[in-house]
Length: 303
Image (tube, rainbow, N blue to C red; front, side, top):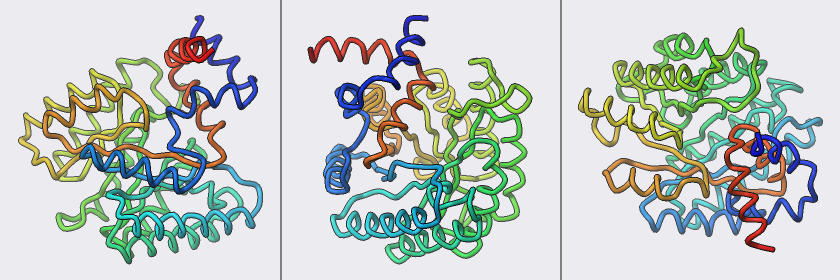
């Protein structure tokens, strides 16, 4: 209850105060800082996926500016030799304003990454966006079969069906590549599983299905039972190390992250940066109120 109370209060605190702890989970406010931190992770044998923070814009002019920023991100990261790819949120490109405009912007970003033989992950947002974001992925994968992936959320009751429906764009040469995560948006019980064990069960079922279909799962979790369950599936089906990866958030559970790497598994860290860090941090708190206790200790420690 205390953690939930703190998580509820923190979004209303001054940003400068919240930044004291948030900076541990953000790779910086500038692209230069993000690239420097991505390179540090690379030096530890960790792949990255760089993301510009922001979503749910209100004008198409913002969408145009965001596209230009992503093109610069790719240009600069590739020039710096970052070993990683890119993630983006379709609403950051105007999905809810004009889906055709958003598609054209995102296509330009994917095409840019493809010129470097690189990859863009389309993040999944809340349920009103799900069908549109799957449609985006389908369309882009047909044109750029090796350069685009999607996110699916294990807590949504529709997810298994959504994965199965992607079989028609799956091939051994260019497998469907999905980041599987629990899901962070508040959804009604009619659409989403709510119980911890139930979500974990479906998470592992989704990964198992992907292994059986020779798809490529990016297992995005900090949850030990899910990680251990994934280990068992990898052993059970003798999955080669280049047929999956684990993913984690920047600054979260570094010890657990290292233990996964030490076991010989591929690891990729989500590297978020930008001026819009506040919304990202408060959303993560709602997802995981247990972080509030750590934050409170950090605030006292820093005076």
